[in-house]
Length: 139
Image (cartoon, rainbow, N blue to C red; front, side):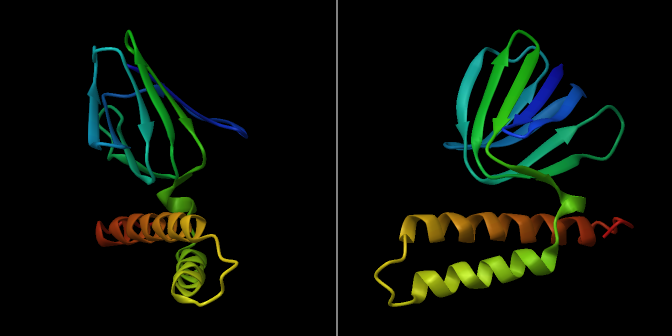
């Protein structure tokens, strides 16, 4: 099936894939060839693509939408990063800042935004660590 991943900055991926696993708002969503038409909201999580006989391509998505029409899938992502593009130290620092904002006493903190930042950071860190655990030489 054809997959197109797009953000506000432009196209991130366009090509044929065998399967997609996406973080839907109601749980993990699997999409195979000839899937029924679907439109769903994505929550922050890991988007995995199976491309022919290659190892899965893993991406951290911060949210967005996934649409399946015919044998075409479109992901409109808020932001998306490949696991090999994530700076683990920077993600850990962002996690620490978010945790400090959440546990702090500052009344001016947007709690919802801080929790979302914490979730995104955890997803990014988990994705990097999974890649490293698999023995990926680029980690």
